[in-house]
Image 1 (cartoon, rainbow, N blue to C red):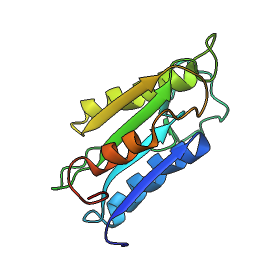
Image 2: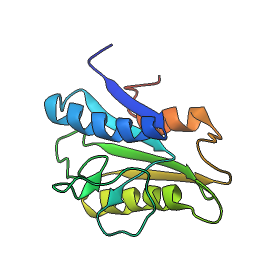
Image 3: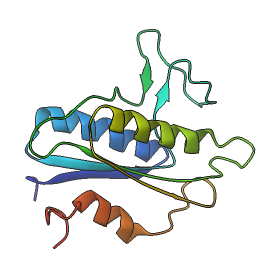
Image 4: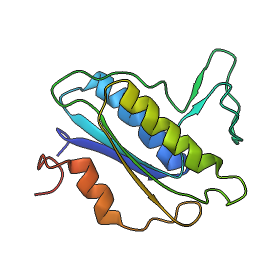
Length: 142
């Protein structure tokens, strides 16, 4: 059913989930209500996080610029990560997930966070991701 679109991914797929969910929300606001990330959140210029990609000169955010979604569905962020991501010594990806959640909330958007132990892309519970994306609406799961 292409009238209800959801996005989810891990690592670079997580970045693409955030990016494509935001883009598709702008294009089809009545079709998109949530996206899920795991093991990649939000990198902001000057945040001090070690990141494998550099920001372009005109960019302040990777992978997308957070914004407010005030339509009836809104755009919920389901943020999943692990506390040792990518490592216990440098949990930069975990911190980027926390940063995404904080920024998303500050903009007045809905967010749900789930953090577990472990490293990069260790998904503890897939059904928890689906439940978060559905958000009790029945749009994804009945």
